[in-house]
Image (cartoon, rainbow, N blue to C red; front, side):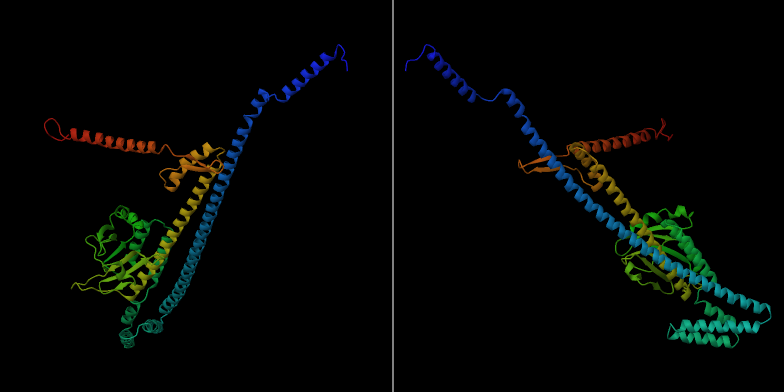
Length: 443
């Protein structure tokens, strides 16, 4: 074939076009595309990992907080249940008081009937009824005490039959609580119900027992530290009518004692276990006050009077019953006081926990969350410092956020204590310098 004059130029153009296409195919990506795609992919991955860590940490923290709140609510329910039990016990005590009031009314009616008969001239009938009442009372008391006491009751009844009715009446009433003492007991319980201060409770107990029991002195021994602080200032509260002492018993423990007589206090026990079930002899009458765990907290002791020959007069059965009634009621009052304090303490713990949870969980970023944890958790739990540690599962390393202000707080506390010591020394120096004048006399 013979090519025309334009054939070489066409082949050359086709070769150049083919070379340009190959250059375009093998050309690297443009710089604008590299700048647009290269920095976006690492930043998106980093943001996704931080968001996952934050959401995981927040879910775990909220789960723990919910468990703590549920546990606190359970404890609060238990406290309310204990409070309801205490209220039921107090309701039973009020019913007993109502029964005693009904008994008092019945006795008053009987006394009124006897008084009316006496005014109407029925002296013989009145004496017969009094003897009948005394015989019933002695039979009820001697039925509980076999032996010599029953014989003693018979002898007293024989004396009453022979004409000495007044002696038999006095002997019978010595073993029973009369109407005036019952009314005073009820008044004492009513006043004690309105007092929560241990100082006022001890003052009221000692004042009323002195009027209810015929004795020389009354002492209250405090064996627990919870009530010791309340009786240490009782001399000022009582206008120096009561006296406070502190001494050591055989177990080596220091106890506090309050007495209405000055001088050294005698004890009817060497260790508290000696008086666990009460104590009575011709000189002392004592009864303990324990808590629900049978731990003795208080001991009330009465010392009997003496006659001219310095012989102890002893105590009657009515005195022992009065002391037991007062101690039992005082025990119930102290248990109710402790239960209310425990309920208030747990309620405050729940409130503090919820407040702490609210402060921490309302933070919207990690910096505020960690800062609030470092500020709040040490004082709430009693920690020295709080740090945060997180683990990155993808990159397999830890994130730490330690508390770097711990040393600064220690230094600040040390500086404050040193400043206080310097102020004390400065306060002491002027007194020493001005304690004497130029001639050596105090000014």
